[in-house]
Length: 104
Length: 186
Image 1 (cartoon, rainbow over the protein chains, first blue to last red):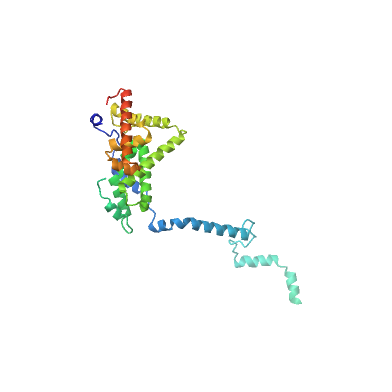
Image 2 (cartoon, chains in turn yellow, green):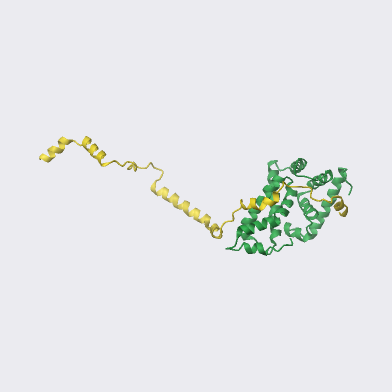
């Protein structure tokens, strides 16, 4: 093996792009983020938390029949002004019936 | 392997500068791990990818690091596993034929713009590529990295006696390959 060492004096025949090792630490530091101590401590329980959350969602969906079409409700965007309400009532109310009721 | 890693381990404690510890880790061991990985995967781009994965794994696993092993030995083991997994993945893509992987690595060697060796060194690298995986690892760690058998044993988890036999067999095979290629007579 000594002969081999002599013949291959310059052992490493590979090179790298210029400045590769100078920038290595900076490049790698940007790619790794170690989880915080709290996150690492909670990690083993993450599976259980996910399981409970899924169970609750499934149970709620089953009891409320979330798959059915919801009943029509009030449109949250419908917000008429006072004038619009009065105009609507004037058009829709049967004034004759109203006056008869007052006379009686 | 001479360095004392206590400074890095101290910086990894809660409330200390973790980023500083990481930069110290990379600047101290990045280059040596790179060359180890490079000799396994041959191409620079592949070595760079494997090195990144190695440091990500090291960083994520530092919490589980057992201090009975030296930090560098442990990192060397992680890098070795990452490099072998990389080749395993390549092998899977060529339907498990190890000869094709060897051929692919040889091609990479031929076209590598970051290879500064002469023809003799290229032939040596090709001869090493023909070795079985374990022999190749041991040969590289012993011949190129000048690691002691005890250190290689700690990284690979193999008995020193076995390593000596493996290295001896690897040297014989490399010598035979070089003789066959008429490049050099050892």
